[in-house]
Structures are given as C-alpha cells and as structure tokens.
Length: 79
Image 1: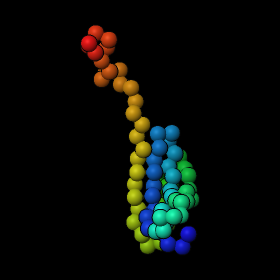
Image 2 (image 1 turned 120 degrees about the horizontal axis):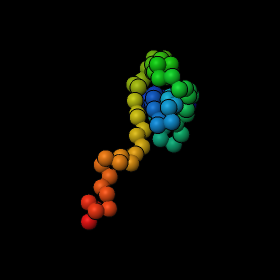
Image 3 (image 1 turned 90 degrees about the vertical axis):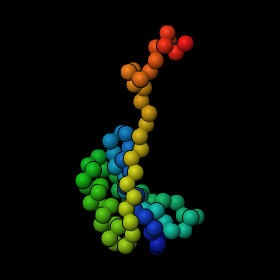
C-alpha cells in the first residue's frame, strides 16, 4: 500500500477504536493498523499516520440501534 487517500478512525459500540488506512486504488482493501480502547491514543495514532501520508482523517462512529422501552409502544398503543 503505497498511496493512502484517507486515514479512517472508527469507534464501535464495543468500546474499541480502529485506525485504518484507506488506499487510493479501489481494488486494494483497507488495512487496519491500530486497535485500542483508548480514544485519545487512537486519535494520536491517526493524526501521525495522516501527517506521514499527507492525507485527511475521517472520523466514523458506528451506532447500533437499541430498543428504548420509552419509545417502544405497548401492545394496546400499537393497535
């Protein structure tokens, strides 16, 4: 992977942060280079890779839907 278009920092609901290198060539797969449960460490690593490859950082937060008991209608309200 010689050319990197974007450094991607993803946060997942399991509490881990992933730093991935997104290649310019669409045929190559993104390469995850760092995994941590510390957000500031992951941001610093992403920043260093962005400086090294002279590219942008993309921040992504993966949100999973949860069942809210407050917003979920009861059986009588659903009718």
